[in-house]
Structures are given as C-alpha cells and as structure tokens.
Image 1 (cartoon, helix red, strand yellow):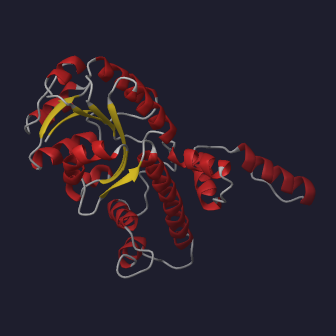
Image 2: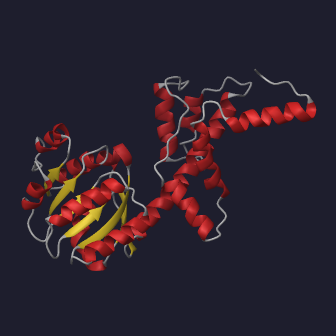
Image 3: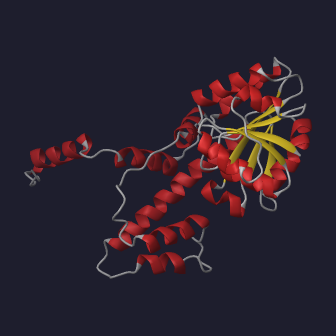
Length: 297
C-alpha cells in the first residue's frame, strides 16, 4: 500500500521504517531535513514541501500526521488540506484531544476528505515490538487503511474503536491508566529504597516480572533504568505531562466518575516540578504555629 507520513519524531521515524520493512511505498515530509534523509536512505521518498509531498502520492492519498498535539496538528492539517482532493484520507496518529479529533473530522468532511484518529502506543520500542493502535473513524475508511494498521501493529494489536474521536478517547484513558501505574511503581520502589534493608532494587524489578501479579512492560523498563543507573542519580525528579491525564480527569469530573488514583498521579506530577513548594512550607508553618513543632530554616 502507499502512504505518506508527516512528522519524523521519536515515533514517526520508526513507524516509517516498520512500514518500509512491511513492503509499503512511503513518502515522507519533515521540517528537519536530516531526519528525512535518514529514512530516505532506507527507501522512503523525500519531499521539500507539503505541496511536493502531496504530489508524490496517488489518489486517493493516505496521509498520516505524526506531529505534536494541539496547534501544530491544526496547522499541519490546514496545510495538507490545501493540496487534498475529494476522497483523500488523513490520519492523525498523535496524542490529540478526542474532541479536537471530532472537530477536525467535521472540517475534513466538509471538504469531502476522510479522517481517522489513531491513538498510537508503543513509544521508541515500536519499531521492534509494533504499535498498539486505537482507531476512530468510518468503517469503509478503516478497511481501506487496514493494511497499514496491520503492518504497524503486533498480532491483535489494532482495533477499530468506533466513530471519529473514539480512537483518541481510548488512547487518552490508556495514558491515564499509565499515569496511575507509574505512580504506584514509583511509590513502591521509594518505600523499599527508604527501608532498613539493603534491597537490590534492580534485582527486585527483575524478580517481579517472573509470574508476579504486578509484572508488566513498565516494570521491565524500570529494570532497564535501574541497570543503567541504580540510584537514578543522573535524573532530576521532574515529571512532565503531555495532557492526557488532565483530559481524562476532566472527563471523569464531567461524568461524575470517581478517579482518585488518576487525580493523585496527575497532581504528583505537578508537585515534582516545584523546587520549593509553598504548600509544603505552609504545612510546616501551621505545625509550628499550633504545636510549636520545629521548622527547618
């Protein structure tokens, strides 16, 4: 099958390589020329502009956007639509907010362009292991693009989740669950780190992946990290977030669904960015005021 990929970041580049290995004809465009050259050397077809990129695809074109969520996706979608024709298909494979995907599907529909939202999980390991794909859009469009999804995914690793927006909705919840799992692992390992026992955390992380009920790929990655740096001394304790946890928390509030683990994991990420928390200073001040408890200057 023929497909165009715009965006050769941490995931986009490996997705192109996996598609090439699967025998697909892949045209690419990326603002950073050096990244484009890397996949062109592997068999991809390079372009110097979006217009040139679109001209190298046969109708009906299938264009996969793999760019940051939000305004960058809107900007790139607008540019692609300038050169699109009736029947073309645009897939957003980034971590877009599902309501944005519903809005973009409507914009495309008004121009007789098909749209699909594809929540994509697999990270930098996707080239080797495949990408778990959660895909929203019309049945006919999904079936047309299915060879691409099948190549990118491991066995049983892709699902047509429903109408426009559903793919990114499921991916949003997926990432929120990931937040909670990561926070639980982080807290558990810190408790072991603080104990009176000299516990080898790297060996424990390996042990738990052998028939333990808490085994997971995240735990395998924890084991990798502890092998590389047992004290994690080369890291600052700052944890960013890319939006999915916040969006899922908003959804939980709107639907009155209790989600305390998610809420706590999101707020802990915010706390990690505070070098000198005012809230913590206020707690210390209150203890000192009511009970005369000592404070640390």
